Image 1 (cartoon, rainbow, N blue to C red):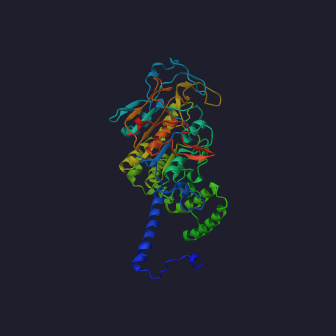
Image 2: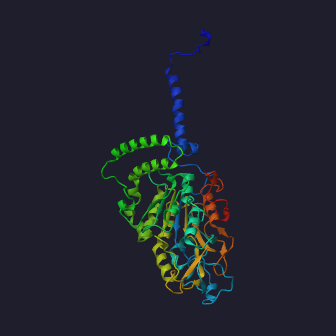
Image 3: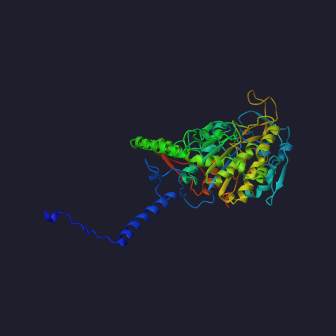
Length: 487
C-alpha cells in the first residue's frame, strides 16, 4: 500500500529569486491576456459568453488592416434629386415640357414631360467635377469626394428602400450597417455608445428599425439622440442621477449586476440579458463624457463660424467630436419623417433643405481633414433613392396638384463618399443622358456596403453572425467591392 501513495517534492524552502520567477511569469501572463482582450485578439465568442466581464463593445481586430476606423453617414432621408444636386443633365432642357425619347421606366406614380433642373451646375477643384449651386460650399471639397452616380436599388418605396440602404434587406428584420460595424470592430471609447444616431425633431419613417441590431446582441443597436434639443438633459433622457452621487451609484450598480449575473447564470442562451447588463454599465459611464461631447459651446468662435448656424451645423460639429473621441459609427438624419421627399415645389423645397446643411457638411469635411481625422473616417452622404427627371403628375394625396416636383426613382441616383481610403476627385459610373437609370458601372446598395466594409478592413462575405442555423451577413448573398473607389 505504501508504494501506491503518491510522493511529492514538498521542499518548504523557496528562495526569493524562485518566488519572483514563478510569480512574475504568472503576472506577465495575466498582463498579456488583458492586453490581448483590449485589442480584441482573444476569442470573440468566449468574450461574449454569459457572465464574462469582457464588454461586447471592446475594440476588436478586423480581417485585415483597414484604411478607415470610423463612419459618418449623412442621410438625406426622403430621396434627394440627383439631377438637381450631383448629376447634371443638360439634355433635360432640350426636351423641357416634352416627353423624353426613351422607354418609360416604372415609377411609383404617374409622370409626364421632362423637368429640367432649375439649379445651375459649376465645375470645382482640380478634378473639375460639377456640383449644383445647392451645394456650392461642398464644391471646395470635391477633390476629396467620390460621387457614385450609378447607384440603384430594388423598389421605389420609402420603407423598403430605407431598410435596404440601412440594413441590406427590403423587408426582413436585419441588423443595420452601424450594428454590423460595431459588432465587427467594437468601439474605441467605452464611455460612449459605439453607434450614435442623430435626428432632429423625432424619427424618420420606419423609426428605430433603421438602426436596429435585430439578431445581433442588443449592445450593437444605435443610440438615438434628438438634436433639436441643446440641453443635455433633453438630448439624453435620465443622463444624470440627481439623487445619488457617482460612488453611491457605483455600489448600487454593482449590487444590481450581481443579482443580474445570478439570474443570467441559468439563462445563458438569452443574449438580451447580457445586452441589458451592458446598457446599465454604459449609462453609468456616459455620465462622465456625454455632457462634454454633446456640448459644442466650448468650440472656438472660428469653428462655429465655419459650420454656420442651426441644428444641422450643430449635428455636424457633434459628429466630429464623437469620432474624435473614438465613437465608431455616427448617422446624421436630416429630420423627422422624409423631408427630401419633394413631390411638388422641388425648387423651393430643395433650396431650403440644402441651405440647412450644405455649409455644415462642407465644414465637417474640412474640419476632419485639418485635424487628420478624414484619413481614417468615411463620410457617406445620400438618400434611400433618387428622383425622376420627369415631372410628377398630380395625384390625390401625393402632392398639392402642382406639376413642379419629382417622383421616387430607384433606377439611378447618387451617393458620395469621402475620406477613409476613398479615392476622391472622381465621378464613378453614370446614368443615361437624362438621369433616369444607371447605365455605366452600376452599383447596387449591396455593392456600396461591401465597399465600405472593405475600407474598414472586412471581407463582407466573412463578417457573419450565425442565427437560426444560418450564417447571416450585411450583404446577404450579394455584393461586389467597387475597387475603383478605393485609393
